[in-house]
Image (cartoon, rainbow, N blue to C red; front, side, top):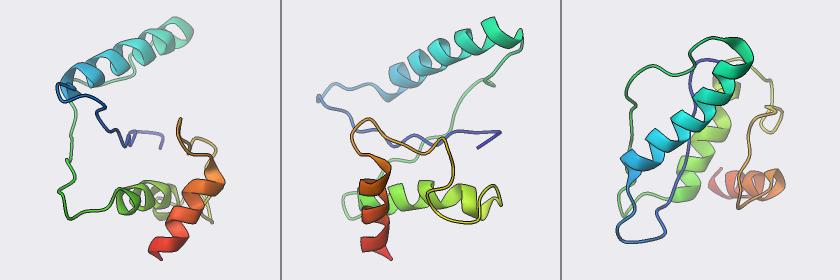
Length: 101
C-alpha cells in the first residue's frame, strides 16, 4: 500500500515484544528509505490489532491480500507486487484465501 503497511506477525516466544518488533522494523526500513530519498518514511506510532483465539490467521491474511484490490491498486488478488511472506509463497497464501472464500 502506498501509505501504510499491513504485517501479520506471530511471536515465537512467550516474551515476544510487539512494540520492540515494530520499533526495530521502522528503524531498519526508515533508515534505508531515508538514505535513498532523504525523506522520512514513518509517522510516529502505529496501530495494532491482536487476533482473538476465535479468529483465524487465514482470515487476517485474506484481509491483507484483499486490501490492494479494495484500494483499486490491482484488479485481481495476487497482482500486488509487494504481497508476500517469509513463511508462505504467494500460491500458498492464495490457497489460504481460497479456503476462506
